[in-house]
Amino acid sequence: MIASWQNQTTKTTTRFAANKSALFQQRRARDDKKLRFRSRSNRGSNQPTKLPIALLKPSHDQSNGSKREGDNGRRQTIARAAPPTEGGPKKPPCTREDMIEFIRSGSKPKQNWRIGTEHEKFGFNLSTGERMPYAVIDFILTELCTRYGWKPLNEKCPIVGSCMNQDGTIRSVNIIGATKDGMNVTLEPGGQFELSGAPVNTLHETLGETRAHIKQVCELAAEKGYGFSGIGFDPKHSVEEIPMMPKGRYNIMKAYMPTVGTTGLDMMFRTCTIQVNVDFENEKDMIKKFQTSLALQPLATALFANSPFKDGKDANMCSLRSDVWKDTDNDRCGTLQWAFEDDFGFEKYAEYMMDVPMYFIYRNGGYINATGLSFREFMKGELKILPGEKPTIDDWEQHLTTSFPEVRLKRYLEMRGADGGSEEMITALSAFWVGLLYDEKSLDEAWNICKNWTAEDRDWLRNDVTANGLRSTFANGTTCLELCKKAVGLADEGLKRRNLGEEKYLAPLWNIVNTGKSQADVLRERLISEWNGDATKAFKATQYKA
Picture 1: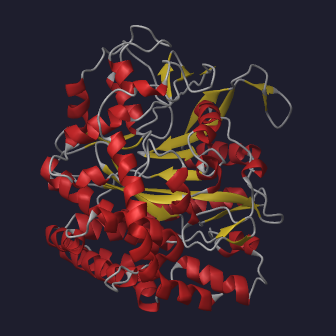
Picture 2: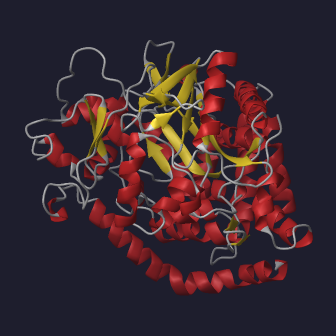
Picture 3: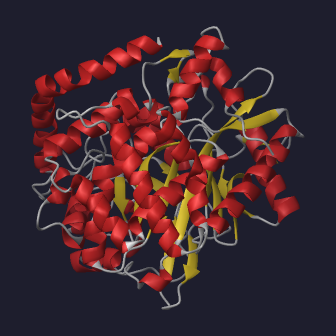
């Protein structure tokens, strides 16, 4: 098996020369179509795609956004994973200019830059390996509130009488998350447990926050015979075998995903990721960070590759998690090659988002199914499901969360290219991007790595690393491993210039670039040498320890 990977490396250059042009032309045509910035009237009638209007009634007793006042008085949102609340008077419709200004308002001086880290993990039964059911998740979330001072995020049961407590009594709400001190715990569709961390000043705080969270949830899970795994793709279960969480919007998404791609349900139920959120000073700074991090995102995918298995077998991938995004929903994913054009900025990104089809609208405590509808029609008050109504700034903020490129712009930048991984890899991802993007010299040098890449180069690398990882090789012979080693070195230098002792958190990345083996490579070696080809053992091999 190892020999076959090495053969892939020697074949990569030939395959690149033969196939990259066709691949690029196909994807560029798709991106060009998306960037015409016009109303999507060709989607047919102004109705949700092949789905009835679904009004599901969630009710939340806590704020859903993790917000913190910055030194300049501007509120910073790091994560908005739970549905919105609708307290106070109704907000007026917002204009196109308001939408652009909303994104621009994230700009802040360097002394106010913060670090936000998000990480997902799979819950599994320690005896059977089965995925964690909602009953156990209910227990963990409830006990986080009871024992550790978190506050619950609740959602009304969609059908009266459909939800029951463990003692058999009827309940009116489900707990679907918890919040404390700027942190949110939320649930992905298949019960993947996510911590959206508070905006913090240093990586030392990131580590402390991560360790405390993992310790709490692992100890609670163990009481029920369950654990948590840090891996990027479920190595055992099919979509059908995974319980869906009782969150209203996931019913809408589950029905819609198969109409727009082949792997959307895999993304929803079988993947886990780590993300880092970073700030920008102004539009110029945003553009430089966006373009640099988007071009180099495949390096993070290769460094953090940790999803080589599927259905109990070797999937012949380094990052299967990243690979499924290629055909999840091309209207809201992709490499955004237009972001490297001279006119890129807040306005152009806002225009792109206005062309992304809608998922839902939140009104009167419920989700209205708006899948496939045009946000531009919404802006004109021409949606038949809400005639005459136009979006508020809250609608726009929610809509910004419904695109999934490798780097996403809201009022901050999200780095979205890494697989779920170990505790040390969670902090390492934040260290990697903070070292590259928060130090001016390292950012300049990082841009120098990729500034001469063509759109074909960027598109090819993003697609090749999912299978070949560190072994991906450009036509000129440069390997992804060489680029990763240089990028880790630049991140190290950037962290050293912060003079906070944070460079130590890059240690696992130094190990990867010095050995040439990612987490996926190590797991695949164990599949052969220890597990007799049984990839389901990867859950326990990647289990977090309390």
